[in-house]
Image (tube, rainbow, N blue to C red; front, top):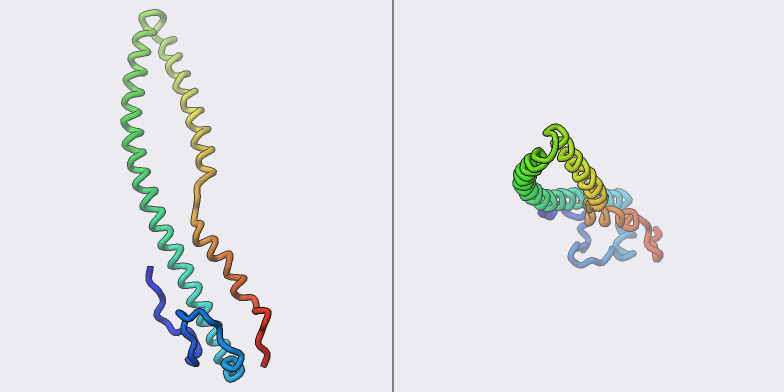
Length: 155
């Protein structure tokens, strides 16, 4: 993730690394235009950083999901082949005891039950998808940052 290179507004000693807000004297000595420019610049920088955080988080989660999907796809194909040949074997076994059509119907009903159970489990797991947790938490804190501090500065 890249950090923005744009300045923070006022050139009167504000350093983002210092983490301290402007003093009352610095704010009183600034024009309203300078203060508005600083607020606009800071909000713009904050929004760019949030967008970059979201992009990075989406890329990171996307890579994990893509790898897992590929592995699940391979496992699914292998499982499909096993299920196909086991189904044919069961069908042939039942065909020795009963009519071929009835044997095929029994195997199909068994697979319908398996599909219903798997669908139910998949639906339950889909409800636990994490999403963009860090970005969501960070965006939730933005309104708190925009509220005035209790010690407030008056002109």
